[in-house]
Structures are given as C-alpha cells and as structure tokens.
Image 1 (tube, rainbow, N blue to C red):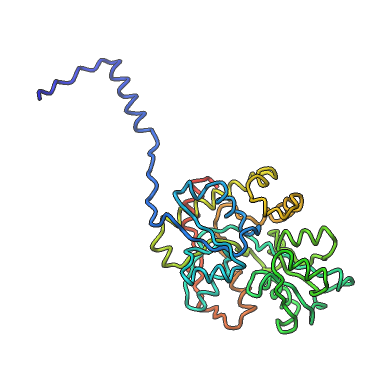
Image 2 (cartoon, rainbow, N blue to C red; image 1 turned 180 degrees about the vertical axis):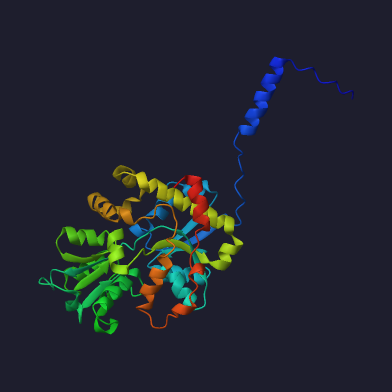
Length: 351
C-alpha cells in the first residue's frame, strides 16, 4: 500500500496538535488495580456488633470490600480466642481482633502481624457496683472481690489486671468471672453476682446512665488510655499470619483500603448516617443508647489505619505485667504490626 506523505501543518493546525499532545501528557495515568491473589477471604471476628469492630461493619455494609474486588465472608464468633482459633484451625484467613494477640502468639513461636488499625484505644471501662459497693472509695477495696469481664483472655481482663497491679493487688487476690458483653453482664451486676465490671459499650453506657456503676477507669478516650497504660494502646485491628501476608500482599492491601475507607467515612458520619448503616440488631432496641455509646467511643476509633510507633512497646509492657511467661526480650515488635498497607491506603483516600 502506498503511504501518503503527511500534510504540511499550518500554524493553526500545529497549535491544535500541540495542545492535544500537551493535554494527553497532562492527563492522569489510570493505573489498573493490582490483581488480587485471593478474591474470597474468610474473616473471623469475636463479637462483630461491638463498637470495637464498627469500621469493619461500615466497610461491609457500604460495599467498600466489594469496591476493592473482594468477597469477604465474615464468621462472627463468641470472642477473640475463638476468632483466633478459627484462623489457626484453617477455617479463616484473617482475624478482626485486638492487637495484643500478635505479641502473645509470637511468644509461643507463631508469627502473626497486624496490618490495619481499627481502634486507637481499647474502649474498655472499669466500674464498681453501686449495689454491692455503694460506699466505694479506693481500688484497694476490690481485693477479694468478684470482677466481671467479657472473657478471661480479653482486653477487659487485661485492663482489670493492669489497674489492680498498680494498687498492689495480685491476680490471685480477686475472682475474674466471665459474664459476656450484653444480657449476661447486666444480669450478673444487677443480681449482685459481681462487685465490679470491666466491660465495653453499650453495656457500660447503659449502666452509667442508670446510676448502677461508678466509673473509675475509662479507656474510651485517649486521655483515659494514657492514664491507664502510660501511652497509646492499639486495640482492634486486622491481623493475619506473616505467611498469608507474604503470599497475598495485594489482597491484604485491598482489605486495608476497605477499612481505611470506612474509617474516613466514620470521621464525618452523623447519627442518621450511622443508624441507616449498621444492622438493626446492633441497636439493641434502643437507638438513643446506641448513639450515646457511639459518642463515648468516637475518639477511640482510628483515623487512618496507622499503628502508633510506640504502641507496641506500651502493649508489651502491659502484657508483661500480667504474664510471667512472656519473654519480652525475645519479642520482635516490628514483626507484630506493619504500616506499609495503611500508608498506601492513606494516600488513596487522603485519610
């Protein structure tokens, strides 16, 4: 085929061509989303309706996982221990749980890494019963008493032990009783089965509103967390085995993107937005109570999914005060959490 010579460009034609070329060069480059190594992910969470995991619920309900090309199957189990067991048993890939488990796992020779933060404070509250201890004055009075916790291996029991140890009360000098997070906890306190309670919202806000407890330590705020732990205490997060993260980095990034998207949404969400988003069952039949509880914990929700650099040290110190078998000198905190995924998500969503 004979190729025709190019037409001579007039000054006007050249100007248009140059403008088009310049516009082409200036146009943003649309990068294809990296291929996910795993499109379907099984996640275990201990108490999905808890405020601890509100960013997860938001990401699920608003389709943020789907936007990242993920199909996430969430298994809601009784507590953190059961969620972790689901991963160890091969029933789930990822845990939505509390950060300190990554330290305990490493102490047992199992390496798991947290990769996006949902909560920058534990949201746990310690209060004494106005029924059995109406004249309470000092924490020393809890010696020999019964303290209700969500579960023995939960962040609620950790807070109780950290506070008690500060007052010289050993673990063997109190009785920690598992009471769960909702009806069981309320029944135990109201019937006088426990003298104090270390629990979370909405239970603690309800008991506080009714005047049934006197709050003595509160980690729903950053100030209260600083008072108890002496620094930032990373709480709810997503974590997985290092082997999983190494094999599925794009999948981990997609999960992180969805959570950080949820965190950004929560920064500006109003009461009406929240009520429309969370499942009706989460409201426990009282929208006012749910919203009051949300206002109490709002400050504790992470902003951008990033772990505080000294958060690992704070958590390790707290755990070491409770567990004599914890070999602190052998714990490599750099292997318990990473900010590499949250950093990318932060840029993407300008969180």
